[in-house]
Length: 578
Image (cartoon, rainbow, N blue to C red; front, side, top):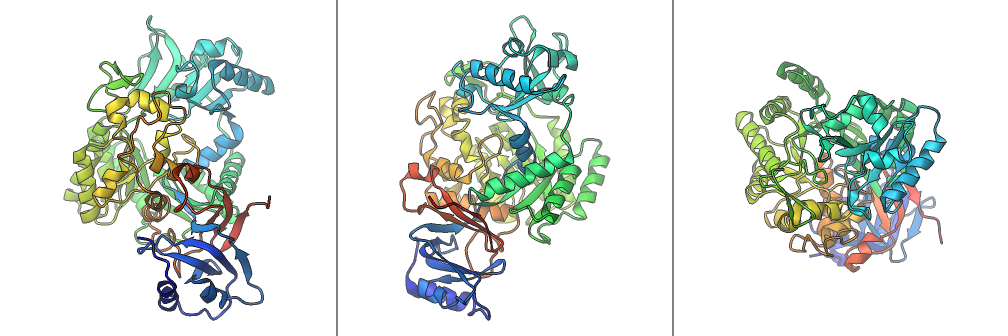
């Protein structure tokens, strides 16, 4: 129950923080301040001095903290929430893609012909021999409801290599020249953990899935550090314009870490970043050595350093994608919603026993680990791996995560609840916007029964669990308001298989959805005592919205507009009037 009585808020002011010795730098008053604290209190005003919230309470109490230089913002009914955060965002690579890759997302393209036109136009802008690089297409949003094939691309660009990554990042389409450069023919075997898509005659179609993508993508010249820094800076600004103040970036390497440091030193990193390092291939001894090297400076349960750029842990993968039908299931995948992809239950990314040994090396070194787990069989494997590791090396508080956790079994759900309670581990890190942005493709592949189990937020809630939501950008758009709406609405973008293929039994209310993008993301970034709620002593990472998300109808959540973003006490975004 949300409480906003003056007595409670005045008590919060008196007990939570004494009257500051110096005036506030910034006061926001005149609208609901949704604190998301343990009591779900809604205040009338908030005062900020330096990087921190110094008081929350009634408008009269907070106004008493003003001085001659205090900036007062009249909310005029607008709502304040904690700054929204993203528990799974490919921040650095997504920023680079946003700036330097051809955008083939909907509605930029709605058909194969649109793709062909965009690719041909891009090719005309490039120098001799340069690759056409694109990203964001999704067969579920194309009129033809099929993959882009090499033959489609050859018809418009045959004299330069083309690689178009799918929006999910787990498969893509190459033209024939790119396939030739990669040495891919009918005789090329599928690589471990990957698939070369083939036609009825066994010829490669141009579509490469999972590890098979690397046969082509490794040939594409990489971008340099200047481009990476520019991408990080640009996405930080874009986050701020959507009232967002933090994210968990999975699978980075040393060059990306250094780019983050450079952007931070330049004063351009206006978000908090919790980085998960890319796992190391090699023998168990080599993995253990890497784990010990990381553990020397990656212990967020002991210290999050400056709370701005945090070396947080490691990301692992056990399976693939719901779009490519490569995620690891107990039963066959569907096709076209009600059809069966007979014999295809997906597959693990590598030998599961070997991956479990690698996970154990990271766990035993005291590292936080989040594991990409889409299918029900993959999620069961992940939960069993957590249980085995905790029995062998009991360590409370590592907060191991299940990335995506699309369709967990009841057994997995029960284990998650148990591990959260007993070990502070087993936290889902789902992507609510999967039911929306890629929801038509997903509904077609998961089928009518499994779709109802996708993103089982109500089931999490009923078990007393918490979860940290993310966008998986650039798989889906990053604005967290879309994820808040998706958590409640569970509606696909186009409704190819009906308006509500996911049902609403697993929906949650707007306040719970907000917590999954604020308080609970902060938990998975080991910052829950510093951000994620609006309370005295917390960092002033705040969002000002044009409407109250707790008072509007569900469709209005998706269209919320960010009016102002405060990060570390500074106004880093302010919407222009009019």
